[in-house]
Amino acid sequence: MNVYRLLGIFAVLVGLYAMLLSADPTASNKGNLYDVANRQGFNGILTLGAALLILSGGIDLSMGSVVGFGAVLFAYLMKEGVHPYASVAAVVAAGALIGLANGLLVTKLKLQAFLVTLCGMFIYRGLARSLGSEVGNSIGLTGVRDKQPEFASAIENLRAVFIGKNSEGAIAFPAEFCWMLGLVALIGFFLHFTAYGRFWYAIGRNELAAKFAGVRVDRQRIVGYVICSMLSMFAGVLLLLNYSTLRSDNAGQGDELEAITGAVLGGCSMRGGEGTALGIVMGAMVMPLLKNIINFYGIKSDVIPAIIGLTLLFGTLVDEGIRRWFRKGR
Image 1: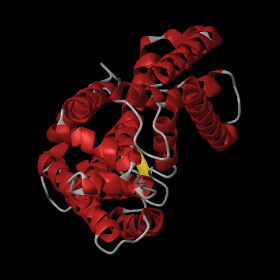
Image 2: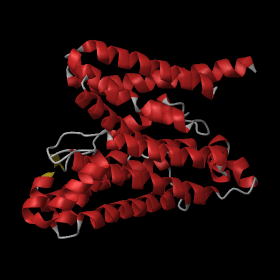
Image 3: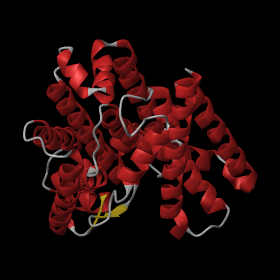
Image 4: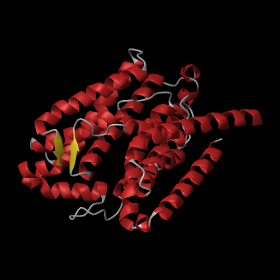
């Protein structure tokens, strides 16, 4: 079944790239293609986190708020005098704590993951707004450089390594896409070639059977939430490095929906227990590509939420259709 899903999403990507390249001559410019690739990389990093939870039967609705909180926290730490390199490490470590809290609430207190992460969506957005008032609701690297001019060189190094931007602000290479590929290779190896990866599939397919088989379900679930939140906070760092200014009240808003959509399109079943690393990355590439096509065709950006909803519905219908067809074939 995974083969058919992979072929299907690959065909969708080929069709979308054909639409993009035929939309406008400038669409094939290196700058635009690099920009699309970076957006795909950003979305792919988040989608990997969402997919890991979906595989094991979980979900995280707070990812977008965590992204915004990560961006604000990154700016706040640098303005307070923490070196940019140390700030990146601190933000990602904070993500581990957020994931640990989510995991413990879900596994030890037996709360619904939907409810826990829905509450987290509001909590971390509120923290981002509160912390944003300390650095200015419109946060950006310019304010950091003004207050800590000695950090300018380190910030440019981070932008070059994580975003691929040169000193003039142009994208020299799609670094975010490369980071996504590296993470996909790492997580793909974990999922498909280790016992722990098989544990996650087993938990998603049948949690009770996995427990009887000796799998430490709670531990695996907690690890999933930790990884997801760490990737979300890392995405917040990327977001701040990529844009000159952000607003603390909406940074990362809606990113969790695009991540879940990418995971579903890539072959992850919302019931859990299904999905591949290759499918996940291809699914993550769809929404940024669609947005770029919308821009070149002159369609109003107001329709993007509707397109996300329709895309998610389409992916769910395809998932159910393939599932039923596969069962009949057996």
